[in-house]
Length: 470
Image (cartoon, rainbow, N blue to C red; front, side, top):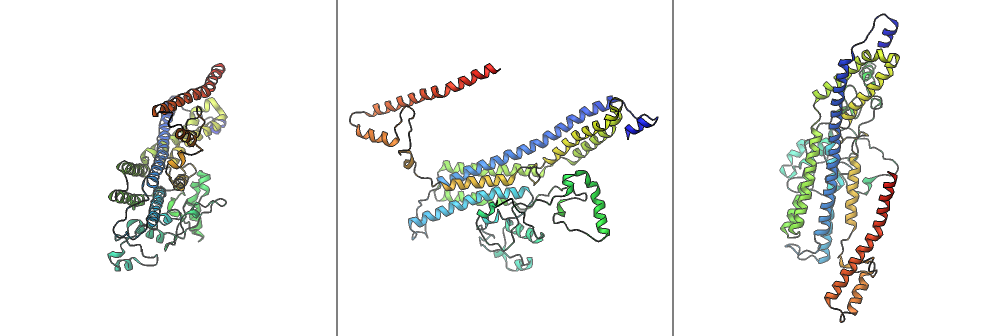
């Protein structure tokens, strides 16, 4: 419009460039700060999930390696045989490994404001946990009313994770299972446990709208909804509660129950049982406690990111300032660009509005958007690592160190550990212990020199090539 008025009328629309130049510089700095702060939240979320993965790995190794299989019979178990006690210990350890995996999965659902435990990737891992304050494993079915549950008395008082899960499932609409590409079905390897409550999918993203691909079409959505109401064709959207009147995705509200906290309570009670039965050394107990504290600390920081958005007044004022700058920009640059003002303003709008949208997109990196953190990938990585830990039987190191497949003193001495010990026994009379140790130290020194010679030459050549190129 500015170009048309200036070209075809006697009216000249232009303003001094001094004010907008200063304003553009200030807006650039503010937008840069806005994007940087949003990316800091994104990166901190990724770092905290890395901490959870590391703590889960350490906790899993402590449970699987350092919790012993051979245990003394306790009162009431004296009639059990040693193999039976070992089998019970293996089942016990593997169940706790499943709880570590359940902690990560529950954190994922918790950050996405998905309450409860009745999900295909979570319920099979925690279904064996007690469901009420008396430790019983029974919970009212979905068809039972709240009055019926109260009539049963305190014996049927469910724990928070079960109450929140049941209420959420009953009030939700019939969930539509999301299909995965090909035969990818990670939930298929989890335990198959029957549930009185229908399990929701592991992923529950909101349905995609055309406004997600073409954002400016949101201005027409209210008129479209009004037209459908007028003609009587009101379409029910299963995720209508996650979008506002203009079709924009809402920020999900935090949930009441804290399932990860409840799971960590069971992991902590397991540590208390190990200490009470003297099954864990003080050093390993400290490592167990530190890993659990690290997981809880990461959860608290993730919750802080999730529940503390950028202030609304700051976002609104910044967005309004950008739009005012873009509105007055054609009046400033017309005298220099003429008809090129149109693409120039479009390019400026693309830059400024793009950075604003990027900041808003990654401000909460825990949802299902393409630019969010892949929480499902993190949980599957933890699942694979825990399964890899449990795949190892943790044998006695003597069974694999002193074997014919180990050459500990290579390259100076190519003999295997078995050959070294065998020759030591054959020549035991002719060599003193000091002579044997001295020979080993000579081999280690020779190995050091050979390794330096074999590896240092290539590094020196690489540095020489680098100097020649530069």
